[in-house]
Image (cartoon, rainbow, N blue to C red; front, side, top):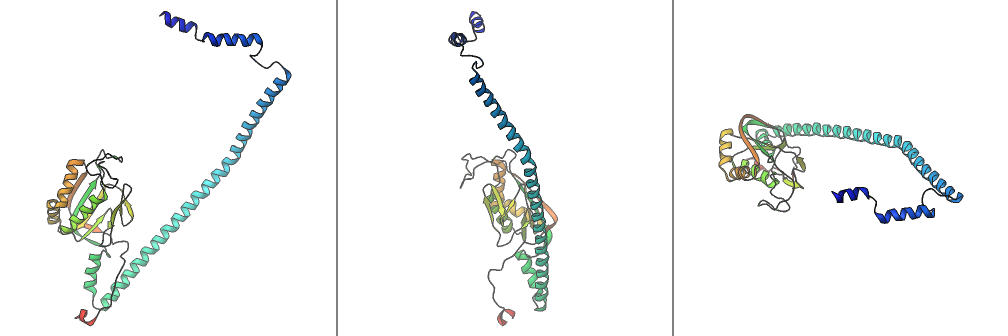
Length: 278
């Protein structure tokens, strides 16, 4: 207690107290006494006040300009977005027109039924029918940090997140199990589709997907579901669920509807010969 009392009674160090008393005795402390020192102090205060005032005025003047520029930028973004939407709508209409003319030309040449089958297999037309719905989602406690887990490859780590290679195995497993058409989050897959990663995002044909990942597959629903779950890829997905907490759910659907692929690029073509016709 005596130590605490001493600290409270002598809060200012003795050396500092002596120095302050010596300055007061010599007249060095307090306000300036000479006229010149007072003028210098007054000039400094005026200069500081002037700087603060000028800064406040400039900020007030610049605020409307910044707000106007921001509004103009927002308006420009809105205009460009609307223009992009109109162009996308035009592209869709032209694509439908091209598809209609292709079908008409193929029917005139006698290859209508075969063309329909090729269009379905290539993903160029919409399809619907029985199939399965498979939902794959990250674990509830999924993180984005690295941990050096057993799944770590090329910068990825065991974080409870679904990876591009996981979705590749899921899709390949569905194809191998008898799926006739497959889509992920409404994105139709074709023989030219690519499932890859950019950072921690999964891309399908360069379009980013957001979990949960809903995979729709057209085929013989019950048999397709059973074959997939018994396949190596289905067992792999089950292992992800048990070991890493990745959530999965598969169900049989009576009518699955898949859109056409955004674009099907023909890389090679050759004329039809009489031998092919026969």
